[in-house]
Image 1 (cartoon, rainbow, N blue to C red):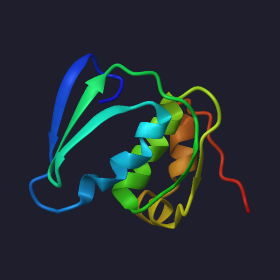
Image 2: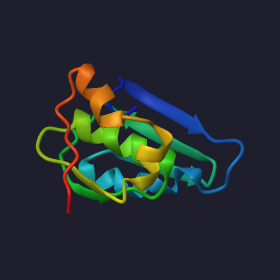
Image 3: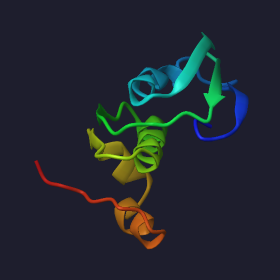
Image 4: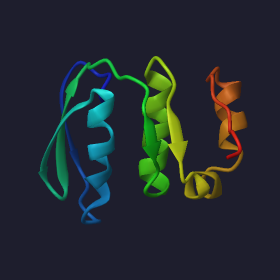
Length: 106
């Protein structure tokens, strides 16, 4: 939603705290306001910049991957275990879509 025109409301009706990862998107340049544990407002489009991040969980991790792909510059995401477990062959699949992405060993 950071790249969509206008204001978007995202409402997570089931899990408290699922949207807490947005604090990782704001240093990238995202314009996001947390209303409460279930709702955030995203204003866009905003240019994002690459950053070094850490994935807190599966869904937030994939959101960070997508934000990193949208951002010019280099984005590095640590703690990718859940992303790889939840999205099989994610690097290869994203490469087939044209993404410039690679998994690096530490």
